[in-house]
Image 1 (spheres, rainbow, N blue to C red):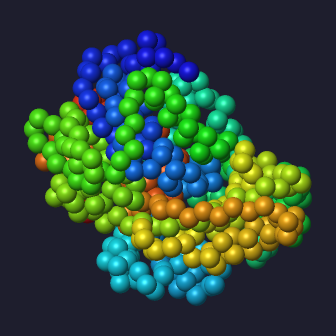
Image 2 (image 1 turned 60 degrees about the vertical axis):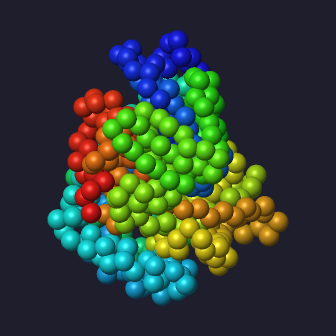
Length: 427
């Protein structure tokens, strides 16, 4: 790893202000490191250990081809069928429906063509910059091996959906996303472990993944500590700011900093309310199962276009990830979601039906806004308070570039991409 005497501090950095980064997920870890590179003295604060939230549970895949927002006319037209399917990808627990209704109304409104286009532009510019930002981040801490150019396969089981695959390929190519339509024979050559009844797939040769999300977070945190970073494991219960400082109230003390960045994921909404800002942030619950199977090998992440889940090879085993479930922060995991993931995984990879296979279950919270864009911005009234949260399904993908953008804003440097789509006051 680089140390603070060399590449860790940006050559142009002149400030040694104190900075708090609230949230030790992958976005917060990248932000803390990026602030250190600019010469700031950084304290990282979280109620949990670093990397233990949603950052732990993702598929490890940098989904840079996902440039369309979740809300669109196509999504709304298919929503009822997805909800009625007991093994479908969308779930609205009845016990939380009354709480999620205001967010759902905003989500429907975000399907307006003009808003979809704005969201697509915002997602595309972040995703195009995502991989180079990660390469810079990992090279700086000596962990480039964590990033693999694996490729990605989006598969279809039904031959009747061949036209869908062709149309999707044409659409992505017009946006500069390179992909190739392949038939069942070529698919079987690339991934022999997949079920032999698959019809066709789109192959994304430029796609990348991380070897292991939690190990990635551990390496980011180790570099942060090695460069003099301080970690405080306490919940932030309140935020206040003025022209001189930002104050963070925890159960033990009130901590004071020159500036602060809120990167608290699904927990960011309550902290912003303290400062007079309401954001329509919902805790979208995602599920995964991780399977140890020495006899099953996949070379790259596999997405199912029909089942709408991803199964990915990680250092810890195969991981199947799925579901969009609006259930808030307090509901317990719903057991049948794990059953569905097992069902889908075994349908694509028959060897995973082995009854003695070890399987671990996890549920976490994605921070999702109705327009599918994150917040990367400065408080409109308090210059010393900034935000980087709300990356929905793309937190891992966009973490390094989000960190670069928010630290540029903090340092008064012109960001490398237009930050306007990610304003906190856009709602």
